[in-house]
Length: 125
Image (cartoon, rainbow, N blue to C red; front, side, top):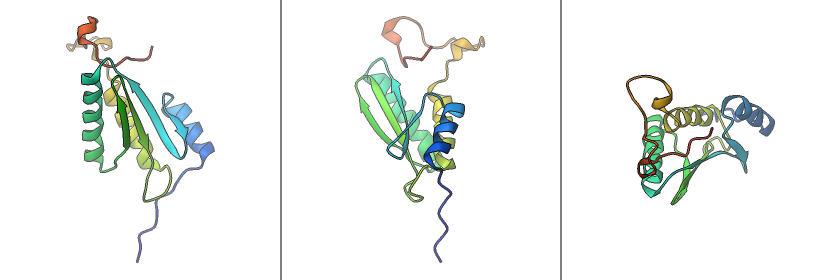
């Protein structure tokens, strides 16, 4: 007996949830997507590896497109043929980890120096 497919969300629900939960993400062609701007190829590879680790740990794998100074993450549930709760959960974790800025928290970790030689993610203001 085949297992039932996971619940998929309609476009209106996805759009509303993205606006509320993940405002930097967008819905496009049946995927939820986010583009991270990076400072260099090294930074791009660090984002890809971070997302790869999170996806493998979650056992839910995005499509990734990259160039020298950006990485695009696309999530949909291939088995369910649409966007599911798994996509939102992984997107939130990716956003939390890739967007982490310890220097803004006032703790022991100071974050990436402002010197352009050490630039990493181009954080949105």
